Length: 110
Image (cartoon, rainbow, N blue to C red; front, side, top):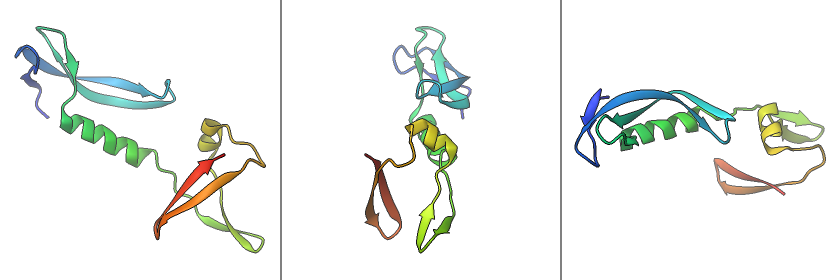
């Protein structure tokens, strides 16, 4: 990553900066998120590469892997407490499970 690039607005010098990025009203924090700030016009922006890296971080860091367990004669998946709290789930609530393909299921809270 370059430490300095040309500003896309004014052609001034934009320097690489890092900032703690808070998403979803502060529930998700990405530390040391890179962006550029122009010293001439003060514009703050991220390159497409920086945005792609941020997207990759979100997609890999916010994945929950759970084992499939036995529950009587059925199979079950437990939900992590972070997910339960975030979606404000309660025992007895209904969900809808939609098969997308052989490797994906879509879950909708009703």
